[in-house]
Image 1 (cartoon, rainbow, N blue to C red):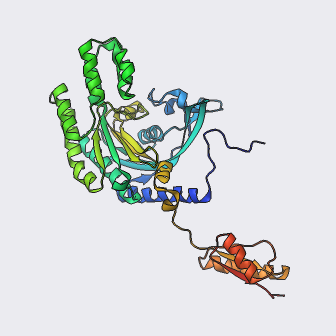
Image 2 (image 1 turned 60 degrees about the horizontal axis):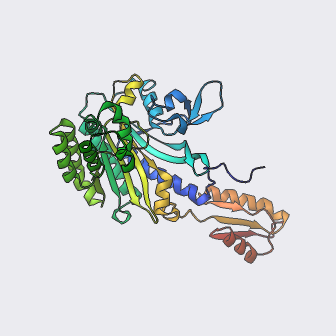
Image 3 (image 1 turned 30 degrees about the vertical axis):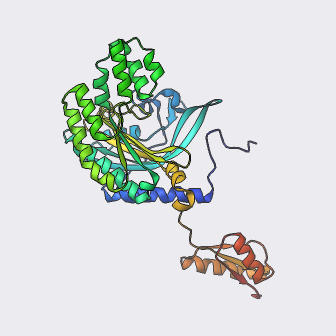
Length: 393
């Protein structure tokens, strides 16, 4: 009999479970305030859906043994987009949805592939396809800031909101010869200077791309440099407008905005604005949220709508803030103890009375010799007090 969980899986103790639940409830309260309704996508989906039209590498999927090709969801966006375009297709747009649950991936470890499970909470905003892109982008970014406020993430955690745009990166790559574009894109996204140096490119173009790789930081200087490279474009104008509106709200919360034209999230789902929220952890940066716009993914499911959203890594937030800080102290329990077998019935009656009054209480299963012994057991069980029943014969 195996005594350890599968590699990559973890046993959570009661306090960690309480902290995860509390964090999900805090986020759910914000989502509801903004008009989002909860959905529950299936944990098991067809591989075709999970791959999202090739946007997610099938080597990262956890497969399920079944008569048809099935797997566990590595994220929730594809499943929700599918449902939005089919079962929820007649609902009025914009469609605001949120969900929370486990996601599963196969990741490369030091000893080979291993399974990974994480708890995620996030939102999806599906528009009508004709709405002003800046409206959805602006709502999504402000909603993320509202979530940070509710969770208590502030300047002390040194949050950085990293923003990029798929169209900007695609336009920049349009200047690279077609045979080298995929490798160049990979090198830029992975910040791999060595790989970029090995590409078969003219010297001046390689130098320009090396400069692009280092082009990230405060919004206005980066936008200026991008305008020098691309000239005036609607994409840059819209991006500048969105970030200008976001700037004051981010500054009030101590969130640093950073524009990075070569940034792309781990999953290649996105074709517009992309984002990642990173905080300073005790030992290293901690990524707690990511997402962006995925209009093309919606169209793959037959929808004419736009789509954008973000997911919050709940366990990363718990580890950042600390379990005790994210799990409010539970209501003090009462230990109901009894002296003899004749006292067990009255002890059970008292247990029911306490529960009926809304008081958490638990029953001790062995006879207890004295009130002092009962109090000692209560302290050991982390109960706030003991009720000892004696002399009921």
